[in-house]
Length: 121
Image 1 (tube, rainbow, N blue to C red):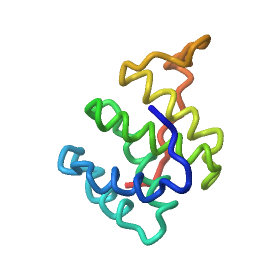
Image 2 (tube, rainbow, N blue to C red):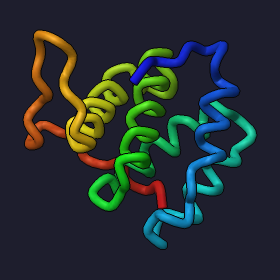
Image 3 (cartoon, rainbow, N blue to C red):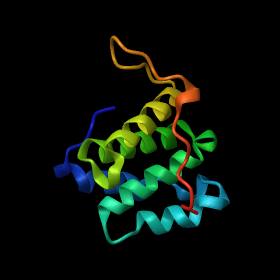
Image 4 (cartoon, rainbow, N blue to C red):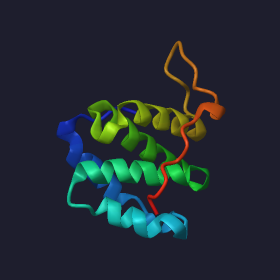
């Protein structure tokens, strides 16, 4: 999974727009669509990463990959205090999706995964 640069923000937004929100649990579907359609693409990326992470146990591999990409993107650019949290979210999501950890490293233990953000739905 390659990290997108800020110049590729339109590509990231296209990925978000293309994600089938109908596959999400009812509890987060409306919040996801509202977040995805937010006027600020930065807010869209951060909120959607957090929302998808909150239901990660119910996501397809495509959903896990999208959530990891969003979290990594936000972390790489330090958006909304995601520099550290976004990296941890992405690692948990990539591990769950079955990806190999970066060479010479291992994924953090599931017990160390960040708790989902509260108040998003």
